[in-house]
Image (cartoon, rainbow, N blue to C red; front, side):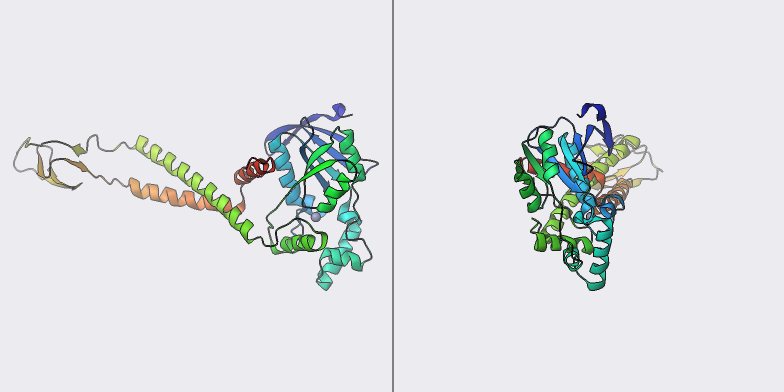
Length: 325
Ligand SMILES: [Zn+2]
């Protein structure tokens, strides 16, 4: 049932084979990535127009969907079940009414749903479970923090191992929404994000340091190649008077541990004989400037959560989900 929809899907410049099947009767779609098998990653995601498509700051749906796809792509296989259950089953108009009450009365959306007579969460997962079974899966690793979702799929006969999907809240609004999910629906989410922010900052700082070290090293090599410096600025062993032509203007060169007097016609060691010259031709200043620029770029990239650093974190998450870390 998959073959006639199979095609190559490209996201973030990475290709993966993708097939699509319907879930139930217009209840959503299953996107099957790569060659799936038992214990592959599965994300059961309910439609959120605001979060998924419009990138609203009011919920974590978009970042959760992104992180799930990052992990599925990194693993090379998995399933995304995208279910038509907008607004936790209340529909888009219901969700909009819920937001309005939340904003007017300073309530979280679960409370505002109750006030409007809606169920706080009326989503069902029976068809999703049957679709996964029809795809040949009996055991899955589910990308979720929602224990209700795990229980609903298990009650349909699937073996489910939950893989936490902790998205660092990008703002206070999402942080409040996640707190409401934890308090009102028992989602496995941290009570305090400070530790996670520190871990994230540490990961970003490590990435920035690696970038700085690489850029500084490459710059130093490039400068050395372009400007090899004086052919020979070191003296070892016993030096002797080569020429004493009078009337020459001597040039004093400060040495490390020694003082030399140099002119085209004479070289004289004043003290001690076994020394190396220290020549500052401006390279240090250039390197410091490049390192400072690299530091600024690296930290800015880290702060913004650049794609590269996100890929590194995705890899780490994947290794942890496989119990390799
Ligand atoms: Zn949302």
